[in-house]
Length: 110
Picture 1: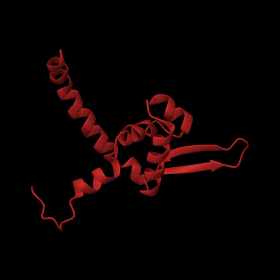
Picture 2: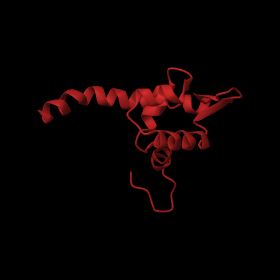
Picture 3: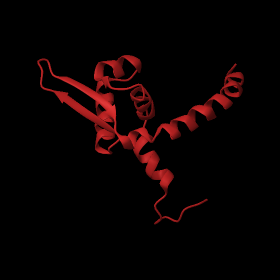
């Protein structure tokens, strides 16, 4: 399964997009539908600065859409793009793996 240095590893590409801390959890929040910045922020213990950075990165990678409404004060909503929605199988696999290994992990910590 090893890759040569010059080969493009799909796992490396994927982790380059979603592998940073909080990114997968931000995506998870958007599977419930459109959310405002404050709603995402309230559901995760993440700084506003870091959340802003992660949302910008996800937008640049085409994973989320950012919609700015010309109101005062401005309202911004975030949604998953069609490409972002395809990550559901990845998150489902992570959820299933975590569920099957959660009990063993928790028992080791006690």
